[in-house]
Each structure stands twice: as structure tokens, then as C-alpha cells.
Length: 188
Image (cartoon, rainbow, N blue to C red):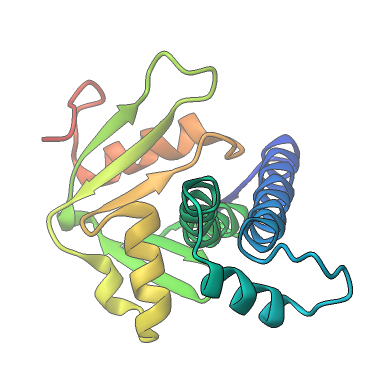
């Protein structure tokens, strides 16, 4: 049984994206602090400066950047999880079905549940594909937080075949063959 993983260049790209996401998160945290907790006293604590600003009333110039930074503080960890899931992605073809494993995730998608494969963003330099499934394999994930994060990254009835995968075209051909799909058949 062959296991398909990210190629070295795919791993480097994912690591660079992960570092970028972490830098964006730190930037958002820093900018939020500056937006909400500016004080005339440079030695004042964050809490003291925030209380001082709330007592005075926040200006629109503080509220809008703060809201944008809160959105980044929430969205960036979700993006980082998606990148981590891609970084750890391993696909193995078994007689029972397509086995996908990553950090805290182990899913087996029976061949009978594979209904199609669709290329996403065909015009991109590195397009990726999704395997459409008739059922939701994320129910196999016991941890509810990891299950929720996986659904946010991939969706409920699909599995992403990442673009940086080594021998990706061979994997896609094998999935189509074992699932009984025509090579030209798109997902519904």
C-alpha cells in the first residue's frame, strides 16, 4: 500500500503559509492592543489603558480597526488549522476505501461513498481537487473540536486532495479507478 504525502516543495509552501498566518495573528493582536488601549501614561498596563479609553468612549478611529483585528484574530487560527491539516495530510488506498490521516484525524471513505472528483480553481497555478462523498466521513472523528475544525477546512461531504501532493495525478487516477468513476466524470 502506497501512502501519498505532500512533496518537499508542498511542505515548504505549507510551512511558509503557516508562518505567514502566525505573523498575521500576532500583527492583529498587536494592532488590537494599540487600537483599544492607548494611554497617556506609557507605563500603564493594558487593562488600565483599556478602562481609561472605555470611560472616555471609543472613537470610530478605534472601533473600526479593533473590529477588523478581532475578525483576523478569529479567522487566522481557522486558516492555520487548514494549513496544518494540509501539512500532515496522508492518503492511503486500501481495499476498504480511501484512508485520510492528518493531525488528530483518521478517516476511511468507502469506495461506494465516492461519487465524483472535481477540480477546483482550474486556472490557478496549483489547482486542488475535491472528492465528493455521499456521506460525511467526519463523523469518524471522536474529538468534537477536531471534527468541527475539519468540517470548516474541508466541508461535510468532501475530502480535499491538496495541490502539493507528491504523485497527485496517480492518486486521483487510482481513486477514480477504484471508485468506478470515469476519468472525465465531474462531481455532482
